[in-house]
Length: 309
Image (cartoon, rainbow, N blue to C red; front, side):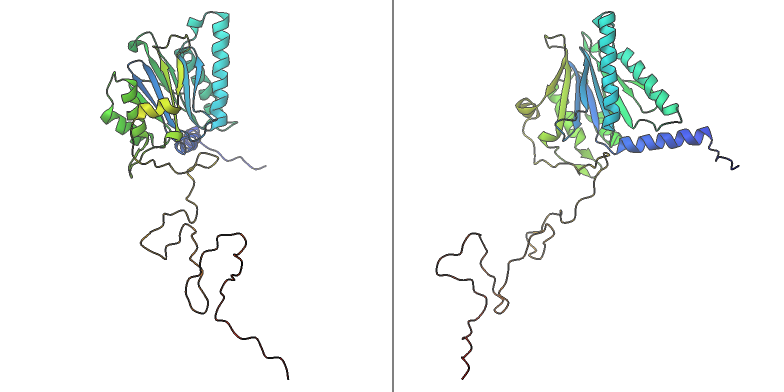
């Protein structure tokens, strides 16, 4: 009878944590910023159907990074829990702190169990109060740890670089326009340089306490988002992602051509056809039937062979 391999609990937990962190880092960052009238969420998300930021309840929002199928299950479970608690007791009994504790127990149990892999997700749970002092922002990690954030928070992708930019430029009590422009600039900041994130790649939502409706969650898109961002430089989209969130390698032939170098055909451009005899370039073919009475030149004309004697 063979003996099973022994792995210490410390090593097993370390391996599971490394696995989850690598999966989360392959995605793109999500930023949460507290401003004068609520909480702002900004993410670089080219998909128009798969949202990273969603509504949970009247004053509570949810944001996540990592594997979509995993954090979508958590979002649905949070909506069901909030609805059941609000229906059984009172809508005021549904709080962000209660949801954060429920998520922490779920994530902690999944991470500690040895029968399945840990969730590759990180979560924001935000709740707004009647004043800015009552706003709450919780960050939950893959292992169930809960952190109470203040001012701003970043998760996923190059979180350390983005958080460093926010630390230098964040101002407490700013308006929505200033907070949005700061968050978008932070998303485009990297160690290699800054870029302008395309308008269509931004997912923006707010918890706005000034709304008259009981539901304070609102998405910002279209012309409203364009007006808030104001004039910007040339947009530069980020690298495409694979199905698991990893940054895909650039495809062959995707480099920019050098207009000063006629031999640069990296992007797949084809050199003009040349006459095999004279070496002169042939006119481009525009398609369709040839003009009447004309034929393409293929070389110097040669007389037909003489008939046999």
